[in-house]
Image: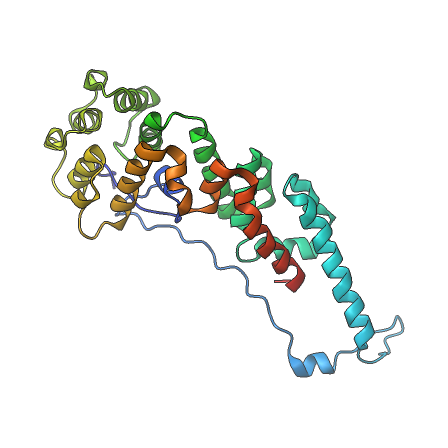
Length: 295
């Protein structure tokens, strides 16, 4: 099924990730596999647990002192690992292998790691993750890093360019065409839209001129409502059931007013692009607690 012109669908709560990873309505959105649930030890089983000796005999239930010593060891391991994690991803490697694997599967681990990657400008943090969480980490890292330092007047054009490169304006838009759209939006120059096919060219012209009337060549329905909303930065023009369109449109308006700082409340990773490591501290505290609890 070919992609309709313009579609917006969130894959995470963060605006910048959403725009970089839009999906069309006719395609099912991927969902993250649920993290493996931490299995609570059965009370009766814990009371009856026995430590095996090399000869196969049992020595009885570990006493309270041994359990406390193990808990202290785990806590110390976690404190040491997390203490250096805010500046270097290799810090986590000091954890025992199984403990590390369990921690990285835990709820919230990906958010903490993504935040640190952005705050430190170090994409190698994302390498601690695997599969879809890693892809999302890298996507958000690239998106926010690409916006850091940009003048606020150029941020909307950059995000629209990313949408274009993801194929959410036409099936076969190439980089040169996406570059044209970005230049037109940033410069307010509809002349730079010359040569683009009718619907995409109309979208480009509408955004460059901020004139919703220029969206008329765009097919009626969701596509045109997105064009009109993006052009005017008026979320009221979005389809009534399109929360995504409203969120992205409001994000564009926030860019225009305050740059990247305008959307920092959406996600800690975005905030990290503005505030640096301080935005990640609450996540790190939760991450350390997660480590100590072994979940």
